[in-house]
Image (cartoon, rainbow over all chains, first blue to last red):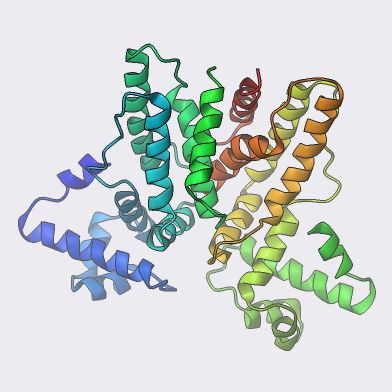
Length: 187
Length: 187
């Protein structure tokens, strides 16, 4: 996803237009705007609505693209402490703190409402999967017993996002508990 | 929650009014109505909007009440097969099939959007917790090693609801995998 966004964000005019569109969507979502449509976004971004109709199938596709980009920042570094438990714990805490921030929560909710049909892949999950894979592969390289990437996604990532989406409390202790549990699967 | 709803649903006129309100909310959510407000619900239900303003703090409170009632049906029986693995597997499959139905998914999404502030307790989670508790206590009574109720909620229920909310595929195989994992925590 990061690559796709980067690839579609060349510098120059079209890069500036895209930034204006992303920013406007971010502002509207952040303000809790009731009705986010192509014309509303276009007006805020100061671009012709045609630009939006041409690039995205519908407003949900644009909302999802922005939400995903916001939820999986590039350059987020995955902890590398030499211990699987420590790596997973720090990583889960970073994610928990990040997605529990009100503006991230609003994006997450926007993403939930934007998805109507079942999606075959979720860029947020894919990105988290790549990060989990780094941690898990390094642990295996050190000879540590490690859960599968799928298990990390199902039992650390899914419960964290579930709690945020359903407005249940998320804190470091919750993140640590999930990591302890997923490690208990391979003991 | 079930008790609260039942208690506030006496027979006679006020019972019929409440049923009309619940039904109208269900219809509007089912139709994917864009704007669900007290006046819209009142018109559909054929009641005076004042009735709604008097009983619920805002439309989100009503939406959440209906969503929770719909998502945790009374009389849903918890499997009792004499084996923890079998009980949990059948229970998880029932939930997966139930919440993956389009009309439940719509309710779940309505619940996600209705929650703005962090909630201290979630009636859906509480209800699932009671059910998990039944299964876990019976297993302990038989001397089977069993996960905690919290672990069942975090690692079976949360991922199932996460998948439904984020429009990721949910099927029996996913439900079974989650149960296998949670049981691996106590082996």
